[in-house]
Amino acid sequence: MSPATTTTPLLQIAGAYKTFGHVTALNGVDFQLHQGEIVALLGDNGAGKSTLVKVIAGVHQLDAGELRLDGEAVHFRSPADSRGAGIETVYQDLAVFDNLDVLANMFMGREHRTPRWLGPLGYLRNRQMLAAWKAASAELKVTIPDPRQPIGLMSGGQRQAVAVARAAAFASRVVVLDEPTAALGIRESRQVIELVRSLPERGMSVVLISHNMEHVLQIADRATVLRQGRVVGNAVASKENEHRLVSMIVGSPHHQFDQEGHP
Image (cartoon, rainbow, N blue to C red; front, side):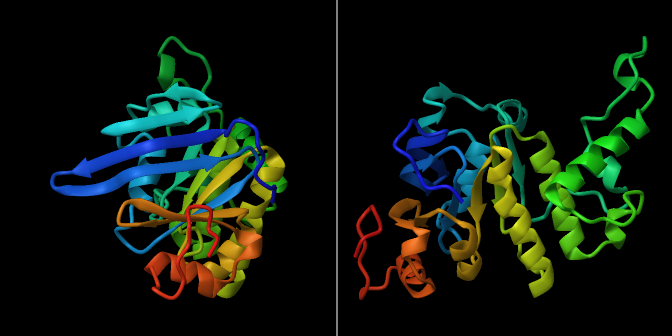
């Protein structure tokens, strides 16, 4: 993990507003992510976490406010725009195809093909994709005995590892993870946590949504807490404990915090 610096944030959201009908999902949200950081987004259901992540991923566009990369304003009109900027997102449902193998899922929409007059319908370069998968999985220490096995036959931890590895292989700046250890056992969760922890070592920054405070304290540098579409606190993870983070999330009257996370 890397501490936040005083340099220009890699990713910054300023004054973000987003409404859906009469519901205000984001109400003046400010968020920063520095190079090499892991920042956790915390909050109850409906706090605005998923909406903020989908703004970063290009699924939603802000009604007001600004999104910046390296200090420059950007406008993501689609997920393709976000991916083109070096941002990859892993949603809680993983977006994998159970009937397809690791390679098909890894390179879906990004297949290596031979150049032909048919253009994108050229023959698949399966050996090249297999070599790329082996290199990525070795670097990330992801163990999948048979990458030709349908993902639907794999354990939850293996499926999650494939989804994270896919994101890491194509991201050049930011990986966004929505509940990466949800529904996993202790051993599988530990494997995924180690995988996430290794991403900054590969030059990536991480935005992490999680309801597991233990995992947040293990791997996050900072935590931004949302409640009812507003940022209610920012905390340095190494200076917090589970009780204080939960107090920030639920708005305990016995634990009031300022915007820097101090009582």
